[in-house]
Length: 198
Image (cartoon, rainbow, N blue to C red; front, side, top):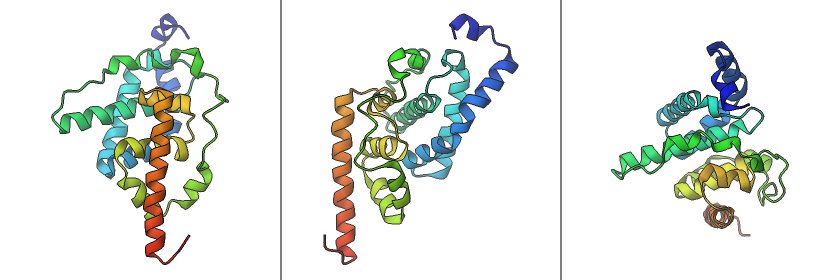
């Protein structure tokens, strides 16, 4: 949809499209927010802020592209900006970058090659998320926690993660490798403390 066409939508058309395309993502979006913030109220605030920004920039969202990735990127940027404000550092993420973000054709191919295969399959990780696994995941630094969530829990490809996080694919791969290593170490320590010797 061209920008002209998007701008000519009535409010009713915009609201209906927004509801149909973006609201089904609210549950995984909340889960992502909660795993970043580790606080229910903060997660709810972050999701609300994300949807407000998504509505504001919705004219720039290209129908048929990955709505989940688009929303996750907005949420991640909001989280970083809130974190910087709380740390009293100047914010460096510009929300206007969201405007043209998901209009590039290179990310529209969903069955993209290299990013889909992971060491930990999404289903098995979700089945394993018990208190200790969640505790180990939550204890990781936020950059490492984020890549595990995006890849192993949400099933994003490396290409999508690179766009969501604004980092090169090589950085995605190395960060994911290190995050999995840290997580494995933490879970091995727990297993040994429970009497398992692997």
